[in-house]
Image (cartoon, rainbow, N blue to C red):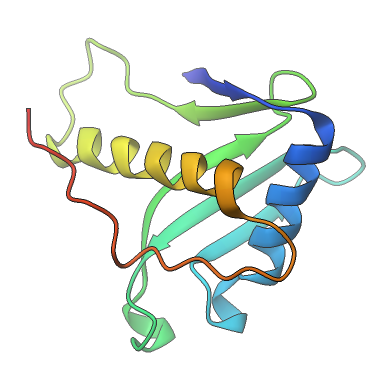
Length: 124
């Protein structure tokens, strides 16, 4: 189930996409970008792992989607409220939201963001 988390301009979506492509796991970043062929729809996987960890130790934290429901929409898959999933899943979704907010605010050409210093997500 997809939820629109943020609406952004097409330019901001392209800026975030460019940042995530440039800072992918093979370049030492945390992102993996998958594009639906023939469309402007993209899935961005956010991995957890430190700057100094080997690639094998990175683990998917969650994903967000660019232009999935409509141009400029940034969506996140959320759990069905009737789904009895892992409690940690809620923290993963909150962390992905935090990453999206940082990307919207700070991911400009020439910048490198450190996600290691993010504040802890409070447990509810």
